[in-house]
Image 1 (cartoon, rainbow, N blue to C red):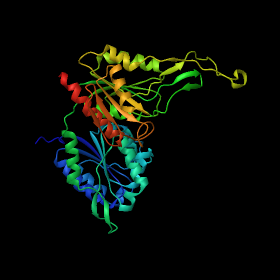
Image 2: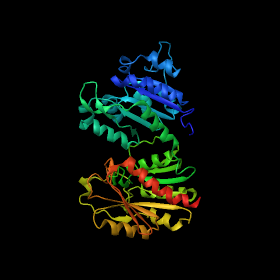
Image 3: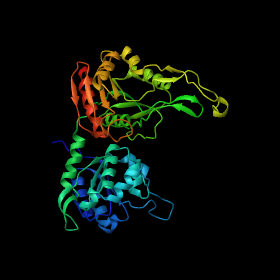
Image 4: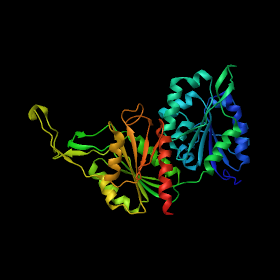
Length: 406
Protein backbone atom coordinates (compact mmCIF):
# COMPACT_ATOMS: atom_id res chain seq x y z
CA UNK A 1 0.00 0.00 0.00
CA UNK A 2 1.28 3.44 -0.92
CA UNK A 3 2.51 5.45 2.07
CA UNK A 4 0.23 8.45 1.61
CA UNK A 5 1.62 10.28 4.67
CA UNK A 6 5.20 10.31 3.44
CA UNK A 7 6.55 13.89 3.28
CA UNK A 8 3.21 15.31 4.40
CA UNK A 9 3.39 18.34 6.69
CA UNK A 10 1.20 17.80 9.76
CA UNK A 11 0.58 20.53 12.34
CA UNK A 12 -0.40 18.77 15.58
CA UNK A 13 -2.20 20.90 18.15
CA UNK A 14 -2.17 19.64 21.74
CA UNK A 15 -4.43 21.11 24.41
CA UNK A 16 -4.82 20.77 28.17
CA UNK A 17 -6.32 17.31 28.54
CA UNK A 18 -5.18 14.20 30.38
CA UNK A 19 -5.31 12.55 26.95
CA UNK A 20 -2.28 14.65 25.95
CA UNK A 21 -0.08 11.67 26.86
CA UNK A 22 -1.45 9.95 23.72
CA UNK A 23 0.08 12.73 21.63
CA UNK A 24 3.52 11.17 22.12
CA UNK A 25 2.32 7.95 20.49
CA UNK A 26 0.59 10.00 17.79
CA UNK A 27 3.74 11.94 16.90
CA UNK A 28 5.79 8.74 16.82
CA UNK A 29 3.27 7.00 14.55
CA UNK A 30 3.11 9.94 12.12
CA UNK A 31 6.90 10.25 11.96
CA UNK A 32 7.21 6.50 11.31
CA UNK A 33 4.84 7.00 8.36
CA UNK A 34 7.26 9.58 6.95
CA UNK A 35 5.32 12.72 7.91
CA UNK A 36 6.91 15.92 9.17
CA UNK A 37 5.20 16.93 12.39
CA UNK A 38 5.18 20.39 13.92
CA UNK A 39 3.70 20.41 17.41
CA UNK A 40 1.85 23.45 18.76
CA UNK A 41 0.79 23.32 22.41
CA UNK A 42 -1.51 25.51 24.42
CA UNK A 43 -0.04 26.69 27.74
CA UNK A 44 -2.36 24.24 29.55
CA UNK A 45 -1.16 21.41 27.32
CA UNK A 46 2.35 21.76 28.72
CA UNK A 47 0.98 20.87 32.16
CA UNK A 48 0.08 17.38 30.93
CA UNK A 49 3.05 16.42 28.74
CA UNK A 50 6.54 17.88 28.52
CA UNK A 51 7.45 19.76 25.32
CA UNK A 52 10.88 18.09 25.45
CA UNK A 53 9.28 14.67 24.89
CA UNK A 54 7.39 15.90 21.84
CA UNK A 55 10.29 17.86 20.35
CA UNK A 56 12.51 14.78 20.68
CA UNK A 57 9.94 12.58 18.90
CA UNK A 58 9.19 15.13 16.16
CA UNK A 59 12.77 16.43 15.74
CA UNK A 60 11.33 19.95 15.76
CA UNK A 61 11.09 22.53 18.57
CA UNK A 62 7.61 22.65 20.07
CA UNK A 63 5.82 25.95 19.54
CA UNK A 64 3.62 27.36 22.27
CA UNK A 65 4.05 31.11 22.51
CA UNK A 66 3.91 33.88 19.92
CA UNK A 67 7.26 35.19 21.16
CA UNK A 68 9.75 32.50 22.19
CA UNK A 69 12.60 34.89 22.96
CA UNK A 70 12.91 38.51 23.91
CA UNK A 71 15.01 39.39 20.87
CA UNK A 72 12.22 40.49 18.54
CA UNK A 73 11.77 37.05 16.93
CA UNK A 74 8.31 35.50 16.80
CA UNK A 75 6.45 32.43 15.56
CA UNK A 76 4.37 33.06 12.46
CA UNK A 77 0.98 31.38 12.59
CA UNK A 78 0.46 32.42 8.96
CA UNK A 79 3.58 30.56 7.80
CA UNK A 80 2.52 27.47 9.75
CA UNK A 81 -0.95 27.59 8.22
CA UNK A 82 0.54 27.71 4.73
CA UNK A 83 3.11 24.99 5.49
CA UNK A 84 0.55 22.44 6.65
CA UNK A 85 -0.94 19.71 4.45
CA UNK A 86 -3.25 18.98 7.37
CA UNK A 87 -3.85 20.27 10.88
CA UNK A 88 -4.79 17.86 13.65
CA UNK A 89 -5.94 18.96 17.09
CA UNK A 90 -5.61 15.96 19.40
CA UNK A 91 -6.62 16.11 22.14
CA UNK A 92 -9.13 18.92 21.64
CA UNK A 93 -10.70 20.16 24.87
CA UNK A 94 -14.14 21.75 25.17
CA UNK A 95 -12.44 25.12 25.71
CA UNK A 96 -10.36 24.89 22.55
CA UNK A 97 -13.33 23.61 20.52
CA UNK A 98 -15.35 26.61 21.72
CA UNK A 99 -12.58 29.04 20.81
CA UNK A 100 -12.19 27.49 17.36
CA UNK A 101 -15.93 27.68 16.73
CA UNK A 102 -16.10 31.34 17.75
CA UNK A 103 -12.75 32.51 16.35
CA UNK A 104 -11.30 33.51 19.73
CA UNK A 105 -7.63 33.83 18.76
CA UNK A 106 -5.93 34.11 22.15
CA UNK A 107 -3.18 31.54 21.70
CA UNK A 108 -0.80 30.23 19.07
CA UNK A 109 -2.85 27.13 18.33
CA UNK A 110 -6.07 29.04 17.54
CA UNK A 111 -4.34 31.69 15.42
CA UNK A 112 -2.68 28.92 13.40
CA UNK A 113 -6.05 27.20 12.99
CA UNK A 114 -7.60 30.44 11.71
CA UNK A 115 -4.73 30.85 9.23
CA UNK A 116 -4.71 27.23 8.07
CA UNK A 117 -5.60 26.59 4.42
CA UNK A 118 -5.34 22.81 4.77
CA UNK A 119 -7.94 20.28 6.00
CA UNK A 120 -8.46 20.31 9.76
CA UNK A 121 -9.10 17.21 11.89
CA UNK A 122 -10.35 17.49 15.48
CA UNK A 123 -10.20 14.69 18.05
CA UNK A 124 -12.24 15.75 21.11
CA UNK A 125 -11.29 14.57 24.61
CA UNK A 126 -13.31 15.42 27.70
CA UNK A 127 -15.64 13.98 30.33
CA UNK A 128 -18.94 12.53 29.13
CA UNK A 129 -21.14 15.34 30.47
CA UNK A 130 -18.93 17.99 28.90
CA UNK A 131 -19.01 16.20 25.54
CA UNK A 132 -22.79 15.73 25.68
CA UNK A 133 -23.48 19.32 26.73
CA UNK A 134 -25.51 21.26 24.12
CA UNK A 135 -22.87 24.00 23.92
CA UNK A 136 -20.14 21.50 23.03
CA UNK A 137 -22.35 19.75 20.48
CA UNK A 138 -23.36 23.08 18.95
CA UNK A 139 -19.70 24.10 18.67
CA UNK A 140 -18.83 20.79 17.01
CA UNK A 141 -21.70 21.23 14.55
CA UNK A 142 -20.43 24.71 13.79
CA UNK A 143 -16.92 23.38 13.15
CA UNK A 144 -18.36 20.68 10.87
CA UNK A 145 -20.18 23.40 8.93
CA UNK A 146 -16.79 25.07 8.34
CA UNK A 147 -15.57 21.86 6.70
CA UNK A 148 -13.57 20.57 9.67
CA UNK A 149 -13.57 16.81 10.20
CA UNK A 150 -14.42 15.52 13.66
CA UNK A 151 -12.80 12.26 14.76
CA UNK A 152 -15.45 11.09 17.20
CA UNK A 153 -14.29 10.14 20.69
CA UNK A 154 -14.68 6.60 21.92
CA UNK A 155 -16.62 5.23 24.87
CA UNK A 156 -15.05 3.79 27.98
CA UNK A 157 -13.66 4.71 31.38
CA UNK A 158 -12.73 8.38 31.60
CA UNK A 159 -10.33 10.29 33.84
CA UNK A 160 -13.26 10.89 36.22
CA UNK A 161 -13.68 7.07 36.41
CA UNK A 162 -17.13 7.48 34.90
CA UNK A 163 -18.06 5.40 31.88
CA UNK A 164 -19.22 7.14 28.72
CA UNK A 165 -18.32 8.86 25.49
CA UNK A 166 -15.45 11.32 25.63
CA UNK A 167 -12.21 9.33 25.35
CA UNK A 168 -9.93 10.68 22.64
CA UNK A 169 -9.73 8.12 19.85
CA UNK A 170 -6.63 5.94 19.88
CA UNK A 171 -3.59 7.22 17.93
CA UNK A 172 -3.61 4.38 15.38
CA UNK A 173 -7.23 5.14 14.47
CA UNK A 174 -6.47 8.86 14.14
CA UNK A 175 -3.53 8.09 11.86
CA UNK A 176 -5.80 5.78 9.83
CA UNK A 177 -8.29 8.65 9.42
CA UNK A 178 -5.53 10.87 8.02
CA UNK A 179 -4.38 8.08 5.71
CA UNK A 180 -7.92 7.54 4.48
CA UNK A 181 -8.25 11.23 3.71
CA UNK A 182 -5.00 11.49 1.77
CA UNK A 183 -5.67 8.26 -0.15
CA UNK A 184 -9.00 9.52 -1.48
CA UNK A 185 -9.17 9.90 -5.23
CA UNK A 186 -9.87 13.53 -6.04
CA UNK A 187 -13.07 13.32 -8.03
CA UNK A 188 -12.75 16.75 -9.65
CA UNK A 189 -9.02 16.86 -10.31
CA UNK A 190 -8.15 19.43 -13.01
CA UNK A 191 -11.81 20.43 -13.40
CA UNK A 192 -12.90 24.07 -13.46
CA UNK A 193 -16.07 24.77 -11.48
CA UNK A 194 -18.03 28.03 -11.23
CA UNK A 195 -20.19 28.45 -8.11
CA UNK A 196 -22.54 31.31 -7.24
CA UNK A 197 -23.36 31.88 -3.57
CA UNK A 198 -25.19 34.21 -1.21
CA UNK A 199 -27.84 36.86 -1.86
CA UNK A 200 -27.85 39.85 -4.17
CA UNK A 201 -28.71 43.37 -3.07
CA UNK A 202 -30.72 45.56 -5.43
CA UNK A 203 -30.38 49.23 -4.49
CA UNK A 204 -33.37 51.45 -3.84
CA UNK A 205 -31.19 54.39 -2.83
CA UNK A 206 -27.64 54.71 -1.44
CA UNK A 207 -28.63 53.18 1.93
CA UNK A 208 -31.54 50.81 1.18
CA UNK A 209 -31.85 47.67 -0.91
CA UNK A 210 -34.02 44.70 -1.77
CA UNK A 211 -32.42 41.47 -0.59
CA UNK A 212 -33.11 38.09 1.02
CA UNK A 213 -32.02 35.96 3.96
CA UNK A 214 -29.38 33.85 2.19
CA UNK A 215 -26.23 33.42 4.31
CA UNK A 216 -24.10 31.90 1.53
CA UNK A 217 -23.17 28.94 3.76
CA UNK A 218 -24.27 26.28 1.27
CA UNK A 219 -22.43 27.86 -1.66
CA UNK A 220 -19.24 28.36 0.34
CA UNK A 221 -19.41 24.75 1.60
CA UNK A 222 -19.72 23.64 -2.04
CA UNK A 223 -16.72 25.74 -3.02
CA UNK A 224 -14.58 24.20 -0.27
CA UNK A 225 -15.76 20.69 -1.16
CA UNK A 226 -15.00 21.16 -4.86
CA UNK A 227 -11.54 22.54 -4.09
CA UNK A 228 -10.87 19.64 -1.70
CA UNK A 229 -11.71 17.29 -4.58
CA UNK A 230 -9.06 18.88 -6.81
CA UNK A 231 -11.08 21.48 -8.73
CA UNK A 232 -10.09 25.04 -9.54
CA UNK A 233 -13.08 26.97 -8.23
CA UNK A 234 -14.39 30.37 -9.24
CA UNK A 235 -16.70 31.47 -6.42
CA UNK A 236 -18.98 34.38 -7.33
CA UNK A 237 -20.18 35.61 -3.94
CA UNK A 238 -22.91 38.05 -3.09
CA UNK A 239 -22.60 40.24 0.02
CA UNK A 240 -21.87 37.80 2.86
CA UNK A 241 -19.58 37.76 5.88
CA UNK A 242 -18.02 34.36 5.10
CA UNK A 243 -14.38 33.64 4.30
CA UNK A 244 -12.88 31.02 2.00
CA UNK A 245 -10.18 28.63 3.23
CA UNK A 246 -8.86 26.61 0.30
CA UNK A 247 -6.18 28.26 -1.87
CA UNK A 248 -7.73 26.80 -5.06
CA UNK A 249 -10.78 29.06 -4.67
CA UNK A 250 -10.75 32.28 -6.71
CA UNK A 251 -13.36 34.59 -5.21
CA UNK A 252 -15.22 37.31 -7.10
CA UNK A 253 -17.31 39.55 -4.84
CA UNK A 254 -20.44 41.10 -6.33
CA UNK A 255 -23.44 42.94 -4.96
CA UNK A 256 -26.25 43.08 -7.52
CA UNK A 257 -27.84 40.51 -9.81
CA UNK A 258 -26.43 42.38 -12.81
CA UNK A 259 -22.90 42.07 -11.41
CA UNK A 260 -23.41 38.36 -10.69
CA UNK A 261 -24.82 37.85 -14.19
CA UNK A 262 -21.76 39.48 -15.79
CA UNK A 263 -19.32 37.47 -13.67
CA UNK A 264 -21.11 34.19 -14.34
CA UNK A 265 -21.38 34.75 -18.08
CA UNK A 266 -17.68 35.62 -18.36
CA UNK A 267 -16.53 32.68 -16.19
CA UNK A 268 -18.74 29.90 -17.55
CA UNK A 269 -17.23 29.40 -21.06
CA UNK A 270 -13.94 28.09 -19.57
CA UNK A 271 -15.67 25.92 -16.94
CA UNK A 272 -16.45 22.23 -16.92
CA UNK A 273 -19.45 22.83 -14.67
CA UNK A 274 -21.36 25.47 -12.76
CA UNK A 275 -23.40 25.19 -9.58
CA UNK A 276 -25.87 28.05 -9.19
CA UNK A 277 -26.42 28.20 -5.45
CA UNK A 278 -26.95 31.97 -5.05
CA UNK A 279 -30.33 33.35 -4.05
CA UNK A 280 -30.48 35.95 -6.81
CA UNK A 281 -33.15 38.63 -6.45
CA UNK A 282 -35.82 38.14 -9.12
CA UNK A 283 -36.59 41.86 -9.24
CA UNK A 284 -34.84 45.19 -8.87
CA UNK A 285 -36.17 48.77 -8.57
CA UNK A 286 -36.89 50.33 -11.95
CA UNK A 287 -34.96 53.42 -10.88
CA UNK A 288 -32.32 53.93 -8.19
CA UNK A 289 -32.44 57.17 -6.23
CA UNK A 290 -29.11 58.97 -6.17
CA UNK A 291 -29.75 60.38 -2.68
CA UNK A 292 -31.34 58.91 0.42
CA UNK A 293 -35.13 59.01 0.18
CA UNK A 294 -36.60 61.03 3.07
CA UNK A 295 -39.86 59.81 4.52
CA UNK A 296 -40.75 63.31 5.69
CA UNK A 297 -40.63 64.76 2.17
CA UNK A 298 -41.55 61.69 0.12
CA UNK A 299 -44.55 60.46 2.08
CA UNK A 300 -46.16 57.40 0.56
CA UNK A 301 -44.00 55.67 -2.02
CA UNK A 302 -44.70 53.19 -4.78
CA UNK A 303 -41.73 51.06 -5.73
CA UNK A 304 -41.81 49.89 -9.33
CA UNK A 305 -39.90 46.66 -9.85
CA UNK A 306 -38.55 45.16 -13.05
CA UNK A 307 -37.24 41.61 -13.56
CA UNK A 308 -33.54 40.86 -13.24
CA UNK A 309 -31.85 38.84 -15.95
CA UNK A 310 -32.16 35.09 -15.37
CA UNK A 311 -28.63 33.78 -14.80
CA UNK A 312 -29.58 30.09 -14.87
CA UNK A 313 -31.57 30.43 -18.09
CA UNK A 314 -28.80 32.46 -19.73
CA UNK A 315 -26.14 29.87 -18.87
CA UNK A 316 -28.47 27.06 -19.88
CA UNK A 317 -28.91 28.67 -23.29
CA UNK A 318 -25.16 28.73 -23.99
CA UNK A 319 -24.24 25.47 -22.24
CA UNK A 320 -22.14 23.11 -24.36
CA UNK A 321 -22.88 19.36 -24.41
CA UNK A 322 -19.68 18.73 -22.40
CA UNK A 323 -20.64 21.18 -19.62
CA UNK A 324 -22.73 20.39 -16.54
CA UNK A 325 -25.09 22.99 -15.10
CA UNK A 326 -26.72 22.52 -11.68
CA UNK A 327 -29.23 24.75 -9.96
CA UNK A 328 -31.03 25.08 -6.64
CA UNK A 329 -34.72 25.38 -5.87
CA UNK A 330 -35.82 26.59 -2.45
CA UNK A 331 -39.58 26.14 -2.38
CA UNK A 332 -42.44 26.69 0.06
CA UNK A 333 -45.16 24.60 -1.66
CA UNK A 334 -45.57 22.07 -4.50
CA UNK A 335 -41.84 21.65 -4.12
CA UNK A 336 -41.13 18.79 -6.52
CA UNK A 337 -43.28 20.08 -9.39
CA UNK A 338 -41.79 23.59 -9.12
CA UNK A 339 -38.25 22.17 -9.08
CA UNK A 340 -38.90 19.88 -12.07
CA UNK A 341 -40.34 22.79 -14.02
CA UNK A 342 -37.29 24.96 -13.26
CA UNK A 343 -34.97 22.10 -14.24
CA UNK A 344 -36.54 21.85 -17.72
CA UNK A 345 -37.06 25.57 -18.35
CA UNK A 346 -33.45 26.44 -17.62
CA UNK A 347 -31.80 23.46 -19.32
CA UNK A 348 -30.16 22.19 -16.12
CA UNK A 349 -28.53 18.78 -15.76
CA UNK A 350 -29.74 18.44 -12.21
CA UNK A 351 -31.42 20.55 -9.54
CA UNK A 352 -31.03 20.51 -5.76
CA UNK A 353 -34.37 20.92 -4.04
CA UNK A 354 -34.90 22.03 -0.47
CA UNK A 355 -38.10 23.08 1.22
CA UNK A 356 -38.73 25.86 3.69
CA UNK A 357 -41.16 23.47 5.36
CA UNK A 358 -38.33 21.14 6.45
CA UNK A 359 -36.99 22.05 9.89
CA UNK A 360 -33.29 22.89 9.75
CA UNK A 361 -33.21 23.45 5.98
CA UNK A 362 -32.86 26.60 3.89
CA UNK A 363 -31.55 30.04 4.78
CA UNK A 364 -29.39 30.81 7.84
CA UNK A 365 -29.09 27.18 9.02
CA UNK A 366 -25.87 25.20 9.34
CA UNK A 367 -27.81 22.14 8.14
CA UNK A 368 -29.81 21.30 5.03
CA UNK A 369 -32.14 18.59 3.75
CA UNK A 370 -32.09 18.07 0.00
CA UNK A 371 -33.41 16.06 -2.91
CA UNK A 372 -31.38 15.85 -6.13
CA UNK A 373 -33.52 15.65 -9.28
CA UNK A 374 -31.83 14.69 -12.55
CA UNK A 375 -32.83 15.73 -16.06
CA UNK A 376 -34.15 12.19 -16.64
CA UNK A 377 -36.56 12.59 -13.72
CA UNK A 378 -34.73 10.34 -11.23
CA UNK A 379 -34.68 11.58 -7.63
CA UNK A 380 -32.26 10.93 -4.77
CA UNK A 381 -33.49 11.95 -1.32
CA UNK A 382 -31.09 12.73 1.54
CA UNK A 383 -31.69 13.16 5.30
CA UNK A 384 -30.95 16.36 7.23
CA UNK A 385 -27.16 16.87 7.44
CA UNK A 386 -24.60 19.62 8.15
CA UNK A 387 -24.13 21.72 5.02
CA UNK A 388 -20.50 20.62 4.81
CA UNK A 389 -21.71 17.01 4.39
CA UNK A 390 -24.52 18.03 2.03
CA UNK A 391 -21.88 19.71 -0.12
CA UNK A 392 -20.03 16.41 -0.60
CA UNK A 393 -23.30 14.64 -1.54
CA UNK A 394 -23.81 17.24 -4.27
CA UNK A 395 -20.17 17.03 -5.36
CA UNK A 396 -20.37 13.22 -5.63
CA UNK A 397 -23.34 13.63 -7.98
CA UNK A 398 -21.64 16.38 -9.98
CA UNK A 399 -18.44 14.33 -10.35
CA UNK A 400 -20.39 11.36 -11.69
CA UNK A 401 -21.82 13.57 -14.48
CA UNK A 402 -18.82 15.74 -15.30
CA UNK A 403 -16.38 12.81 -15.49
CA UNK A 404 -18.43 11.21 -18.26
CA UNK A 405 -16.66 13.54 -20.68
CA UNK A 406 -13.11 12.47 -19.78
